[in-house]
Image (tube, rainbow, N blue to C red; front, side, top):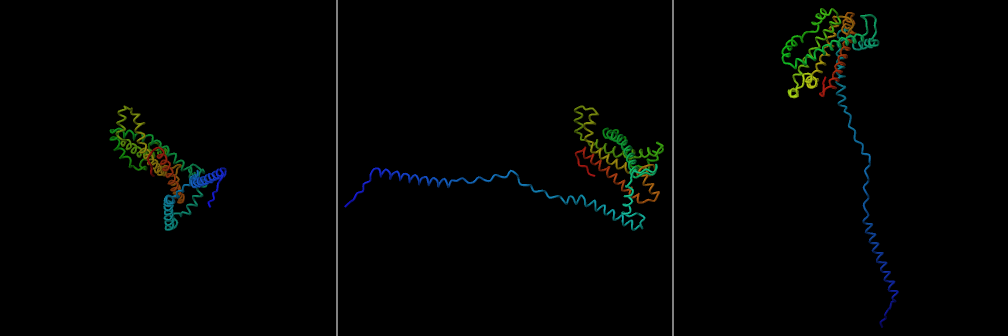
Length: 319
């Protein structure tokens, strides 16, 4: 016996709707799963606005040691030799410690005045520097233009080169009596000696600098039809400046050497006369102090001129 089951149209319709909802639910679940799988990766972290600190360059201790240590060792060697000589001469030459104590007393009042020939070491140094400035200034005013002329014109070079070669090696002390005879005074004679001894380095170095100016520069000046004044100021002077400043440095060193010897013989106020006066009083400590003072002042003059030469030239100036 066959039984048949009949469904009403409403039941069939509701069943089909339920099946459609279930299918749509499955599709949406699958779509949601695919979306969950397609989640974008997290964005990379934004770099910090502040860059990492740059590692500091280590300090050049070796360079500092090479600058400081050798001079200290040289000074220590000098003091050691000085102490050995002092001991070996039975203290005829004072020891470094005794000289240092005397220097402290001496420089406690360097500008005292107790008479025309009894003044502090400060006044003596200033008086010597004044003479050097006057004599050196006159030598520069004469020597630098003369160097330009000798280097610029061959005829003048051939004329004066033998005279310069003859007079340059003459000792400063040989010129001093001539100054005393001509100027009838110790101070002008000392200035004359500084002048005649410090003029030669400036003349020679300036003339050599003019002769080494590239010929192309002179050809350009000839093409442009420049006057002699324009050639000197616009072409020769900038090219010759390093040579000229070298001559000035040498001349200042020569002038400072000459003034000590000249003042020993002429007398008056000055570091040279002070050394000679202390020798007459057998005060060896003050003589040694004067040697250091003369060296320090000369070193300061040299350093100042090196800085001047460095400021006005593009070349490295070595001491």
